[in-house]
Structures are given as C-alpha cells and as structure tokens.
Amino acid sequence: MDNFFTQSRTAFLFGIDQETQLGIQIKAYGGMKVLILYQHVCVQSSLIDSVRRSLEHSSLDFYEIEVDNNLPLLDKIAKVERICEDRDIDFVLAIGDENVINFAKAVA
Image (cartoon, rainbow, N blue to C red; front, top):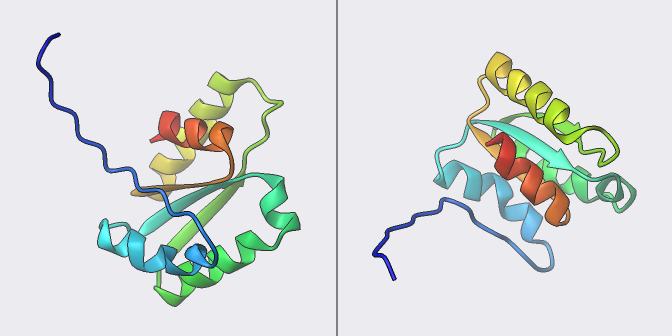
C-alpha cells in the first residue's frame, strides 16, 4: 500500500434539533456566505425553515437552491458554480440524502 495523507473539512450533523446549531458550526469553519442545497422534502417537513432561522440568528448570508435530480447533472453543477462565483459563496451546506451531499461536494 502507498503512503498517503488526506484531510476533509466535511462535517455531518445528525439528530434531533441539530439544524439549530448550523449557524454556530458554519461560523466555526469560517463561513459567512452560505449556499444551501436541499431537497423538496426539507420544505415539506419545515426543516429548511429551522435552518434559515439558525443561519439568520448567526448573521450569515445565504442563498438557497432546491436540488432537482431530474436535471442533467453537469449542466446543473456548472450553473450552481456560476451562482457561487457571482455571490462570493464561501460555504456549501447540503441538506438531504446522498444525492444532495454528492451534488454539494461536486459544486464545492
């Protein structure tokens, strides 16, 4: 096996009311302008509302995009990358399943 070093600045928060800590966690990572990527189910469950409150409470700017898995992936990634550049996004927050997480990793 070859030697290697890896480092990841990815954090996962799971559990009841963990979304209320997002603003604090994002600031700890140095984020100030956040891109929220989420699935529609987050709207239905009102999870996105709780996330917004947490970020607002921490005085973070944010922009939201609902991830639609029906769109061509590369086209969607390129579009979101342009949005990030235009808005000086410095933190990507994924809320949802592995599809949203993988999309966020590609964008970041």
